[in-house]
Length: 218
Image (cartoon, rainbow, N blue to C red; front, side):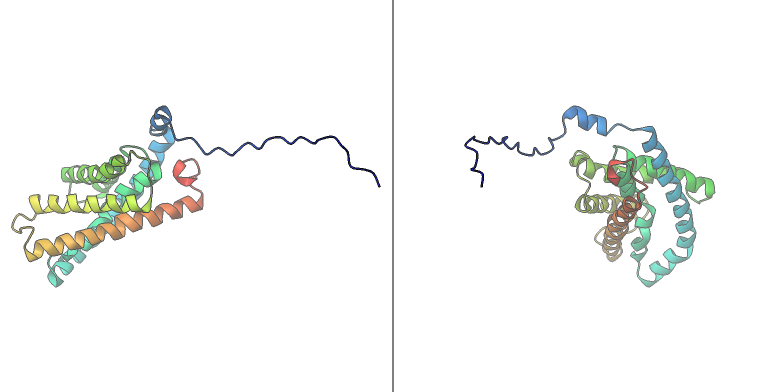
């Protein structure tokens, strides 16, 4: 049997695995710049949302009065069907202004298809988008989680609820039964449709592979 070699076998030192370095300011700025594909996909989401708004608008003529008759203020349970794209657009495109862009395109499509609203849709879209964008901006457009999405949806619900109380329901105070019921229903609607609903839609799109060209789909 051969004797073991007396030569010392040297081993290469192990190089520890390095974690991904945090994004630099320049990388972050570059990742938040709009690309042509962002504009195109944002427009597509806006067009589809506008068609859905038009359908929901037609349904609301019968549903809103019925819900109001059953329980004044409960029609707000369906309000977030008209602003869930505010969070969905941000989750997909992940660029500052995505919420406003998607909602404005959706509003334009709804007006073209036919609605009793006109300029007020633009104002409402900007109010809702501002609320949605503010929450993601607080996290510097770096956290795209369910928790942040829910916070954003609640922000939209709160802002839109006070917008309605101030401009449309001046006869009711916030602390009136109608005001409290409407506020509770608005927040519930926001969490269900603009929070969980947008998150579920986004995750389904990501798993389908249609978002492979986006960070949101990786």
